[in-house]
Amino acid sequence: MDVYGLTGGIGSGKSAAAEIFEDCGIPVVSADELSRVVVTPGSEGLGAVVAAFGDGVLDDNGELNRRKLGALVFKDPSLRQKLESILHPRIRDRFQDVLAALTATGHKMVVYEVPLLFETGLDKQVKAVILVSAPEAQRIARVVSRDRLTEPEVRARLAAQLDDATRRARAHFILENDKDLAHLKQQVLNLLPTLRSGAIPRPAGEAKDAAARPAVPPPPPSVRPSASLPPRPPPVPKP
Image (cartoon, rainbow, N blue to C red; front, side, top):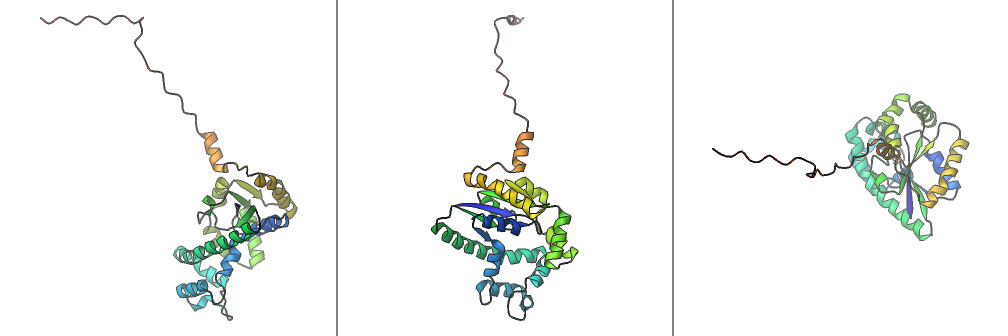
């Protein structure tokens, strides 16, 4: 099965792109959804999170309060790494279970929506990376409106992720989500035939580097003595 990674910074519109792929009949697996599954009440994952961060990250129903936890880890990279060390292995195992089920039902292609695709090294494990990109100011406005976060809170999350220039250089395909939903949908429709064909271009950054790299000149030919050269002078006789 071909696994295509779908990624983008917070507020870029990954979920909107994922819905379009699903509408086109392509199964989409969300790493965010898997992260919720592995910390359901009573799960081993939630127990590990509480052991690491305390009962204060739970709500009144004993469920993980993701906003409280996010406020902690996005201020402290060491805490974020601790959380990732708990969640990522469990998410990876659950994804493999889902992938096996999709393969058994005959699917040939799946889109894996992962916010931290590059940060976790998953870009090396998928067939190609599809990046959803949008201007930073637009992304911040979307998240403030959608999640009721303050602008400083959104910027803290942005700082914990790769910048968009780095993502663009490493992505194989880029969906520009700076207009309306119809514009994004048309880009997905245009991309699908290429994904189904399996014809994958080089990442934009690699292609640019290759184009800018000067050609290596061939080595000069070996210089051999020519018959037209004058004869070497005789040795000077010793006295």
